[in-house]
Image (tube, rainbow, N blue to C red):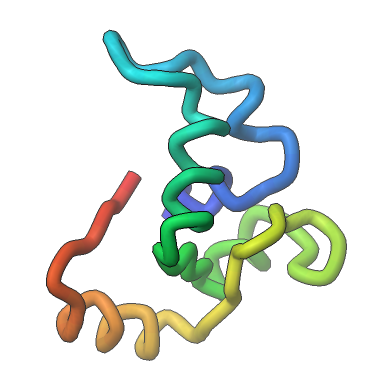
Length: 81
């Protein structure tokens, strides 16, 4: 859904940080640096006219919706925004 905007270049810089937390850009970049997977649903970005070859932040990985669901079910923890 709309969570794919987090993987779009420039989006996190325009988003107000959640109360008491560091800026969203910092949270996302630290998540990826620490080995977190930022998986992005291809049909969701296409619906929102986000180009996977030019518009996604470094570390974002595109995947099919079904594969994304399987990855989420097999993970120990999932962050959904």
